[in-house]
Amino acid sequence: MGHTGTIILVKAANRREAIKNARDFLAAYDRGRVYDYYRLGGWWSGLLTGYTPRDNPANREFCVSCNGTGKNRSNANEPCFQCQGTGKSLKWEWARYKGDVMPLSDVKDNVLKCLGNWRDDELKRANEGIAKYEKEGDESMLGWYLLKKGNRLCDLFTWYSAVYDVEEESNSVPD
Ligand SMILES: [Zn+2]
Image 1 (cartoon, rainbow, N blue to C red):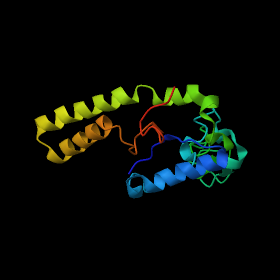
Image 2 (tube, rainbow, N blue to C red):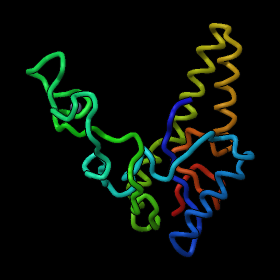
Image 3 (cartoon, rainbow, N blue to C red):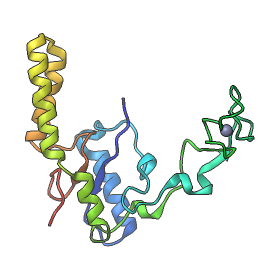
């Protein structure tokens, strides 16, 4: 399976409650079958605020690829590909960042940007897939795109949802 980033909108009185409500939703929705694993923030850390995890020294570690030298082993004129010549490569798991849980009013522009044309695009992708695999007679792929279309038309939460509003049960951002 791939990795995707989804913004979950919940009603909550504070930060702690927001995290709990999001976790409860993820565990309960479709009996937890949408995701096999998730992290708060994760590889999408900073999406809401513009923070860049790669610039945080806490997310860097000794680069084993170049033994911390920053030099490319096969071409001395090039920097190490793994750490871009810094001698410190990006960690696999990043430090938790507070800005990954925010009041919607503070980050609404970025949330709207992430939602973008998701609703239209998702339907378009589904219809294109249906047309293609109907023509090719690939029933398995056709089924997958029909499911994708059904999920979209029923406005369900899926692993490729961009922004999901738990209260409204909708792939959208409230006014
Ligand atoms: Zn390196």
